[in-house]
Amino acid sequence: MHTILSDISMLVIPLQIALSWLSLWLIVRFFSSPVVATWLTNGFFLSSVAAALIVNLGLRLNFYDELSFRGILISQMIGMNLAVMPLFYWLDKRRSLREHAKRAPEAALHSLSFFGGAGGALVSQKYFHHKTVKPGFRAKTWVAFAVNLVLFYAILFYMP
Image (cartoon, rainbow, N blue to C red):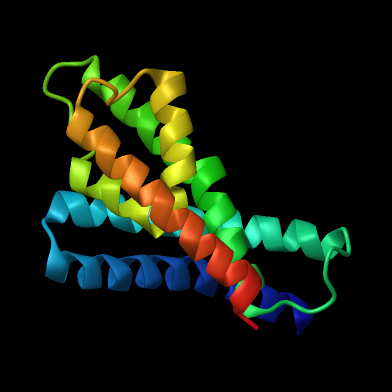
């Protein structure tokens, strides 16, 4: 009986992941273009996976006994900065070197920066030498970084 249930759950989990990705894509698509929606959905999905791995590591190392919403938000911001932004900037830099490649829209990169990935965006800009020529792009990234600092401070010290 246990193997039947585990076999069924192994089939259901990918379906749940696909349906949650699709539902998030549809929500974001309502507010933006299909390309921006795809990049944002992939970014949010990857940061959720990174956050889940960070939370799992924290639980295994006994960093905290019970998980709170604050811990999940902090893990999400860490995952966004460590995994998603460097990956997206690296992909966009690689695609910028090829002709006719689908690039990451600036709106998607800015949105992900404002949703917790501005530190990773700044480091990725410096490391990959990408999007450093456009002063408007860099200014928006620095504004996103300031917003992220305020948000992180508020989550860390004022959220129960």
